[in-house]
Image (tube, rainbow, N blue to C red; front, side, top):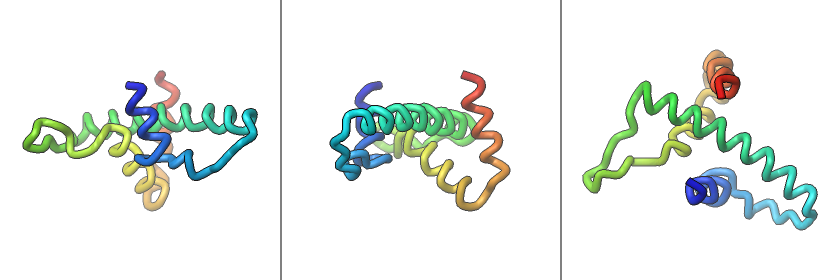
Length: 95
């Protein structure tokens, strides 16, 4: 949903508000890159959720979002496992 995207670009992920950009062209370019990154991270989260389901809490909600799951897996892959990055890149080409 759009709410998920806005949360992701703000406090739950990319922290866009910390950029303090004023130039509209630069902000447009940044938003375009962030939109692509959001889709990629969401695809990673969806893929990883199919491999190992995000735990459901007592109130019947996921312990964390698909986006957060994907972001955490991407960060871990970039830090520790370069082989999985190739697989994650393939997720972008199937859309």
